[in-house]
Image 1: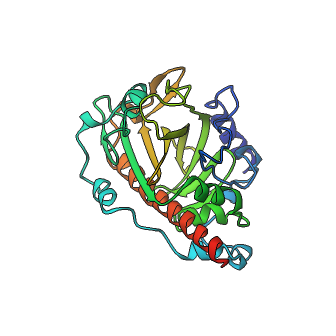
Image 2: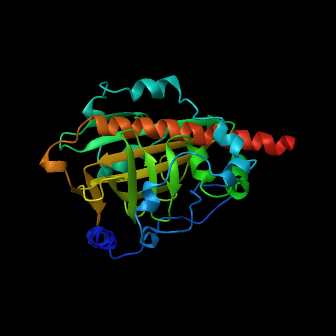
Length: 306
């Protein structure tokens, strides 16, 4: 078992960049960007993959006893009807509406932001494209900051409550969850910042943008550590408008963004199965709707003292 673990880690380490994984931006209570609260361990700390295989969506006794468990008990929050329709399987959008990361600033940094909100397709070059936009009316900077600073459940409950049944554990550089096609491990191997993708900060066109985070990711079935990883690039675009808080998550499957350009890693040199971007867009729509619901519920509870 030890040899298998070491061989696996050497194989994965060969894919890792030489730079540190850092994509956080300084916290600003006037323009709050949420970051996941993880278990304070990294992939390198895992010495026995049984640790991963034994993970599940159930709450531990400590998590169950926590007053924060009530947010997990609420279950997933349904996205808007528009998002549900836009992420249904076998209903891709016109590929001409999708775009590569090289065009991200041009497509997103415009008044009102991109007219593409939620949907998926396979681009002409074979890359899978998916986007999900979630808007929460009434979520102000104060509401978001309150959640970031004060929502501190024990164990893995922060991540589990984010998407009950879908999220399990978040490490410093990896997450274990079900993104719509079975349990996977998501290795975050390089941070993507606004600067790296050529997005001006502060933005020139979309004045409501408050920040961008992202990463290059290696996605593998949790129980198939020798499987060829799926290459994904992800960007999260945050907006704070007078009406509320908005988050747009965009995925590109079959590529990583390196040194200012997209590098294709298409599986078997074939176009990505459209079911993959559909699943990721749908997962993002559900997880972000649940996250936003929890933020507003926690705010209400803080105000009433419950």
